[in-house]
Image 1 (tube, rainbow, N blue to C red):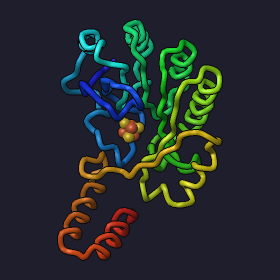
Image 2: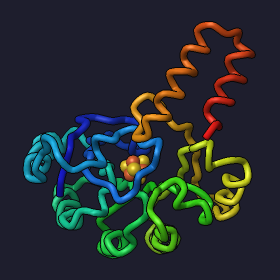
Image 3: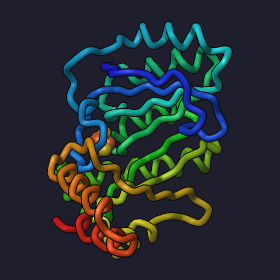
Length: 233
Ligand code: SF4
């Protein structure tokens, strides 16, 4: 496993739990709005899994759980073993995933190594490649959704689906097609993309233009201009 960093404490990212958050490095998607582009490349200064486990061991009495996020955690072969060691410390695990690796996800779920899964649903299935830059991956993501639901039904595992709104693709129709897939009672959230440090420099440039307009325009004018800039492709 390649681990780019840790956040020593979060009260927000694992609902109802005090947690530490671990950022794995590397991702098989290339979402234009990815706001941690340094985490999708695998070079640079990293922590070893053992360093991270030692840190968690020292602090486990103050924690309820561990959030494993990325990058994309499931591309790492050592993830299953890493999760097992965390569970042996008596902590719960939340996994953030893009859903692209149902095989690893299935192993984690079958072995009861995760307590909460948050899966990104990037777009309606027909538009998936336009956000992820990864052709033909939607079949894996559909399979992952099914596995997550199955674990929810059979073991009560908590889960959520979520979409970061990327206006050039996630228009009203696209979001409606995602919402139509959600089952009654499921947690589904949308969130705006954050510009400024996006993988796609063009999005950052648009964000700067938006800020400049915000300084000079009226409130009404600002709102209209911001939307125009964000949906322009
Ligand atoms: S936003 Fe996309 S590219 Fe960035 S880590 Fe998540 S899945 Fe990978």
